[in-house]
Length: 138
Image (cartoon, rainbow, N blue to C red):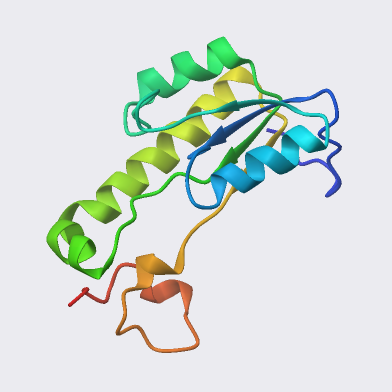
């Protein structure tokens, strides 16, 4: 993908939003639609973002000009503690699949959004990138 200027006018543009019904996603979808974008919002029920072939098929069908990648592996502390072993792997698979598919279909703009949940509750503050996934959840 060729880097573009920082500004992006979503009016009349096709935008794919992963995690489009999530905590943040529903507001991003509403905002993009209000700005005149044609939005396709994915959920866990519509595409498994860990499946590269499925993500590519989704993007080939949607033909997005931009992608806002919000989907992630999330839950409360108890859920994170129970699923900690798969969080980093699932996150990596989703990111790799979304980025690869976006490149293959010629997406102009890709925005990825992460969560501080990847640091765990015992990570030193201020949070540093080299501390990602290194602090187990209780």
